[in-house]
Length: 221
Length: 385
Image 1 (tube, each protein chain N blue to C red):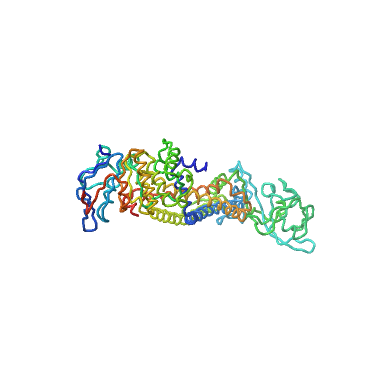
Image 2: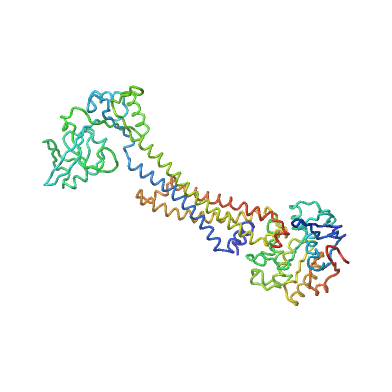
């Protein structure tokens, strides 16, 4: 069973007097242990699609299933809960909080859950991405590649089913991007999670299991 | 690290604290606004208290006194012996002290001083001596004010002359403090027999237990001797300083409210500054807050985090402000009352608490809108920056 599924999703925006249709009936699914890459020209609707998969935005028409459950009509608070427990996010600009150390950044998504013993898991995750000796460094003391690894560790803190990556190698040089993608591939297998990435980066296709091309809000393949 | 670990158990507090630390200058300036507001409220409030205490201490023991003299409709130029007896029969629970007064020039060793002369029997009830003694039955001796004694080079035991009669000085009294009878000018107190050529008493002082009793006595006497209404008649003029103090107190209360109002305005200005700072910093951190929301931080948690920031600003500013106000208050009490520790009494110290509480309250209030706005921003929009 697919861990995430979009069925005939339409997304329309009101932009001034105009109505822009960003997604025109999109079907999509991703399974555990699979890395799916979404590619397409800018303005094609791939970011909108990632927002739908990431439960950051709700479709105008169509349904979204998460782990077999229909989450289409969920309230903002319910969606927040799903994002916290089921999803992990990695962004192009890393988006680490500058005033927190590496280990604190990793803990961040679970920090308001007092029940979880998150410190040990955060340290363990940072060791697994090769930053065991950088635990107390703040983001400005880390290189871009190191920051993105902290972000990957952060996305895994709550044990998600799906890892969403928005141009994860966009701000990294080719070699660093490659090591990050190797890291993600390894973690995908270790944790048995689905990875959905949006990218322009050609080298990413070397690591992907399946590629989805979107043009003008319509899936091409 | 251990402090940070402990703080991590209160994530809102931890995040708020770290966020404030990111732009120390801005935090300090926002807190400074609050500091000024608190100092304004607290020190103006305490100024009111200091003035009130000073006024009370100047009136001093006079507040429990009632003073009686001849009214405008009296047939006599003073209070008669019969009237004194009548007062004594009505007022049984207070000391009734009739006095005669005059003024004269006292000379000694070639120096002259113009003094008011008071003839009284129970000098002890009316005067506090700084040295020597004031007898309950003044029959031969005299009291003289300190300043006059100094001017004329007189000491205890020296004689002074009034109306051809010599009196030996038995006590020195404080001069010129307060605005009671004879205040300002030097004073000579002699036995009532020394003014025997004046038939009537110029005034009668009644000393009650306290200000309330004095007010009651003055009302009783006024009712007994005088009539109100169309044919209003004032046989005896009855006045008590208790009502004077009430007037002063009510004036000072009004003044204090006005001062607090001015202080309050500065705190309102400060909270607008906090509103601005919080709004700016949440707008700047929009993307960051979007990330928090994306990774599953609840709206309520974002709200709490930003409200905590505002609360910290208010608490920080409030504490520093209260500290500064304490110093300002101590200086003020030193200047007005002459005792800097007066600031620690609850009557004035409570304004520190009020100022602090108002600061925290105003800051939280200013934090509500930015916090609400940040928490309810759509994550997609926020991530776009």
